[in-house]
Length: 193
Length: 317
Image (cartoon, each protein chain N blue to C red):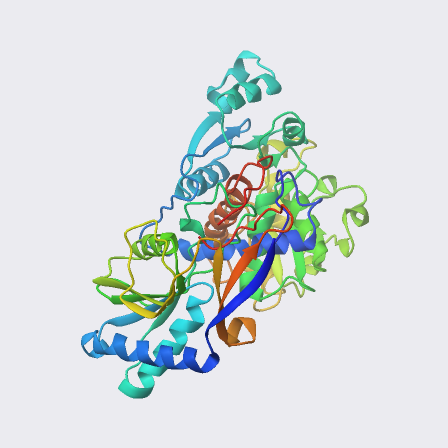
């Protein structure tokens, strides 16, 4: 299996502007952001949630609490993935009870990650509301889940992959659409659900 | 990512990297225990057989709780109430359990090597919960986790182990683990409870006769349970043990001021450890218990979660 880049979906500059816009939307639709808190889904939702909070602080002067959620233990595909995923820590050091939570992730695809994230959050308490913010919505949902805040909606085929590259994790900043081209019969890795 | 282990039989055969991996994997489960809702569905539909051929309270409850909090079911075999009493052989008992299709077996046995024997004959992961005088790997991992959390490292620490070293699987597993990280081990206890050749136990392992000297400058002091059933072979009056080897506040003052006190339990207050030490600020005894749950959850997740070892890798996505 070979990976070929088909096209760029967001440049570094566009990515920055998109996040700015989403930060404004979140603040605007959260009534002063009083009980607002962001929860980034590992891995790339984590830096995205940090950036959104920083941005909200910049224009609204509100300190929005940010947590990081690892969904590994809540995945529904553990018995089928090739390699067993390593469990990472969940760092949410504020009570989620009665919070107005926004889950932040890079790509919304089947919706299964978000289902897992919600299960994880409910183990921590009872939020007043949960909304979802994603950088890219690529369609192909397998669960009744939609995002409240979307950076960019992209039409994709099932074989394509949306690659989000962030400075904090990947050392570069852009979003690409790539495709898997079969050249040899190889086993896929346990990718994102 | 680490190659998945088929079993957890002992510390001796694990690499330092494998041990570090399990200590790291225990972290999320430590946090999990602060959650209001302590129940996961990760291992839903899996069954863990808990086969204790030797009596145990804390390890058995710890493994059972770890499995249940991961969402797995357990089936328990207890020595006192089992067909062992009726003369069934180990392998027949274990094969009977296996015929009920558990996904793993957690096993304690009074014979050293019994879990290895079973592991060679069954296709499911075997977790050693203590075998004879050989190993107690999960205890060593939870001790290491406790020490690493408090000290930030294991490398170069001075660890003193007091008591019956010869018969202690806890001591053996701890020595294997800690010496892999370059800790220096000092052993101290009655002469007949000392292994004949201490130096062969590992690098940087020494034996010291007097407890005052053994504790001097220690970063960690681990008191082992005096197995009272062994006080008769040869006779050692409890008074003599207390006078020579009990961990008292006065003796502990010779250790570093921030030294940790560990005990694998069950503790016999007034015998191997003074109550003031057991309840003192340096004592990590209850932390060890909580960490035991985290370590066992991490191990069960590793060994029982995920696809069966022989399953073909599906092309995912």
